[in-house]
Length: 340
Image (cartoon, rainbow, N blue to C red; front, side, top):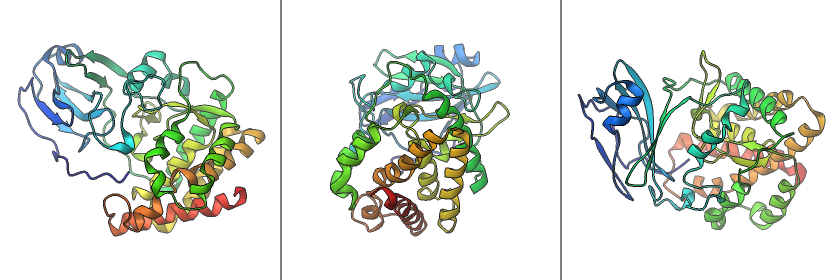
């Protein structure tokens, strides 16, 4: 959420007939597009242009590019263990870890995103390129440009999410990890505000007892693309099992902290997302459980925001991001007081 984007900048570099463009990252140098992969996906080994869609490596993601060629376009997401040194999102080589570096190709292979249909969908997987250097190239459907968001539009996503996650909570698949929030908090422990720092483990144990569902765990609005093919969600790198209501909290909090919705609309957004998510669940028992997760779980997840806002943790935020992050923290802290 707050990592610097100064690693490199490219608003859409034009590379006529480039087939071996490379990118340098913490783990070394990687080839973005292989001719044989471009030929398979786009019908032509010679690409016309590359457009960088992610300004820096993070976790296992070296980068994401829009590739044009053969009269069409696709998205290439390049994965590699050790792509980024950022401790907050460090990828693991352990398949049981919530941040296993191959989680996204794995959930596609299992058909996990398909379980969210018809409410939500993932971009179509066009090809998985297993590279000789140990990296993996995911070729994905190009969903076009990101959406513009309003409070009502974010709430519409929450309603669809509630319907899907309520249904999925009744029949959980095998092979997905639990424990994402524990792993997420670990590198941030020294920066958690009270009363969450002292009550962290007790809260986590409570969340473990609540109905679980399939969670995306990074469901901020920038990862959602409304379109003619249905509401599509990208970036399934952290998909796993978690308490019902967790993704709805991320959706609302990140919309504020990432300046997608103005801080002045925080109260309206947090209320609208919850009302829509609960409506989507259409189950009184699940709704009661999800209410605690939405409030208490989200407040715990983002209990490091005060340290960031105060300049005590990470790069100093802009004034607008400071306002958004503070508004998100205060809104969920107020909700969480019922359960503290």
